Length: 369
Image (cartoon, rainbow, N blue to C red):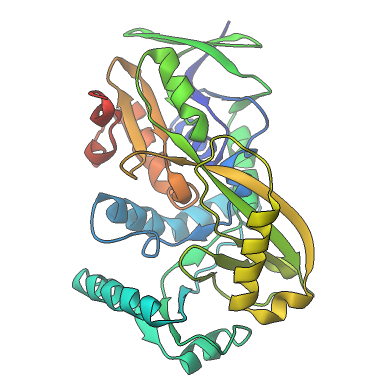
C-alpha cells in the first residue's frame, strides 16, 4: 500500500494543476492516471480562453470563468518561470464573425447584456474586422470583438504542469485504472490495477469518465461526454492573431504555421471515431471563414470528449457521503480556462476547509437525483 496526503484521480490539466498547488502547500501527492497525463480532453482541446464567448449571460458560470481568466496572466508567468516552458499564453482578444441577419440579431442581444454587465465588447464593421485579421473572408458583415480574451498552448500547458509538479515531488502513477474506492472520516483508500493508495484526501478529476467513478462511491456525478472532432492544417506561417469563431465552428492559429479547426458537438457517448461527415463540415466552415485555407495541408485529425453536466456548471466540492473525497470535474468546454481557479478552490478546500465560492458548483446539488 502506498500512502500520501492526497491522491488525485485523473491526470489532465485540472488534476495536474491541483497536484501542483497541493504540493506547493507542503502536501505529499500522487496522481493516478489510467493512460498518460493529458491523454483525454486536455490534448484534444484548442486552448481558447474565452469567458465571455462561452457565456449566454450573467450568472455563476460567467463569474467563475471571468475569475479564472483574471488569474491567467500571473498563473502563466509563474508556471513558465518554474518550468522553463513557454505555454504560449497570448492575450489579443477574439472575434465572433457575423454573416447574416440572424447573426446580427444575436449580436445585438449579446452586446446589450455585455454592456449591462460592464464587460468589454465592440461591434466591428467588415473593414474593422479585416484590419485586425486580413486573411478572413470579405463576405462577412462584421464581427463582435472581445478585446480581453486570450489563448494558450494546451499541450504545452500540460507539459509545464507535469514538470513543476514532479519538481515538487508529485508522483505520477501512469497506466493505472481505479477499480475501487473506500472513504470514511479517517481517510480514503483507492484500489487500482497496480496497487492500493491510502490518503487523507482524494480529488476526483476524471473528466468525461467521472460518472463511473462516482458510482463506485454510491453517489451520482452526472457527467456525460460531448464529442468534439478537430483537424489540423499546416501553412507556411501563422495566419491569425486571435481565435476566430462563428457560432459553433472556430479557427485557431498556433505557432509554426499550425491552424486548428473544430466545433462539432456530438452527444454520441464514447465514440472515438473521426468521421467523414464531421471533417467535411469542419473544412466547409473553415473555408467559408478563411478561403485562403484551401491551399493548406491537412496533417491531422482527432476527437475528444468534453465532460458535460445537466445544468452546464462544473462540479467542484466535497461529495456529501464521502467528505474526504472532492470532485473537480464537469468543466465541459472550459477545462483549460478554468484550470487556475479550480486548482485554487480545491487547494483552499483541502488545506483550510475553505468553501467560499463553491456553493453553486457543489456535488450535493445532484443528491436528489
